[in-house]
Length: 169
Image 1 (tube, rainbow, N blue to C red):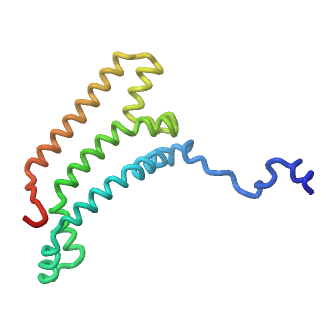
Image 2 (cartoon, rainbow, N blue to C red; image 1 turned 60 degrees about the vertical axis):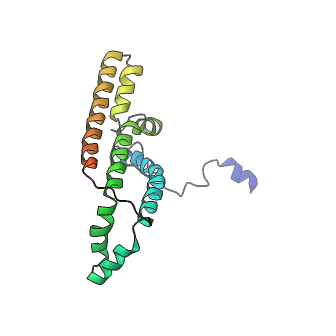
Image 3 (tube, helix red, strand yellow; image 1 turned 180 degrees about the vertical axis):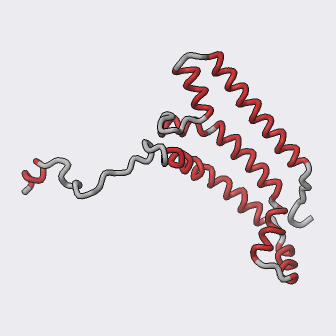
């Protein structure tokens, strides 16, 4: 029996279907690259939001209960306004990381094939694969200016937000 089993390599799992090529299919390749980035960034974000949620005084929730607020009302009118600054700051970081940090993951997972070429990877390929350093430098500067412009816009919004301290004085 052992000789028969060893003589048939690959026959043990022939009843299983072929695995789906998530990274080769253009319909699923980009989402297959996005999921690990979201998963990697979720941990620190959740810790920051958890700490901020613990900083909201219970008096706000008790007052909302007395006023007859529902769970959704508490989220919309207590949590979101209190965490508005943190949400904006986290959004700026996530937006910049989506442009800046996605290059390495997409390069490692797909190499830019199957419709997953992002701006940073396009710049990298232009510079180091096709040796077009001038256009690549121009694209990098433009990407940098776009990110700086977006950050300045978000900081203007953030400057209008009122910061409140929580806890006992």
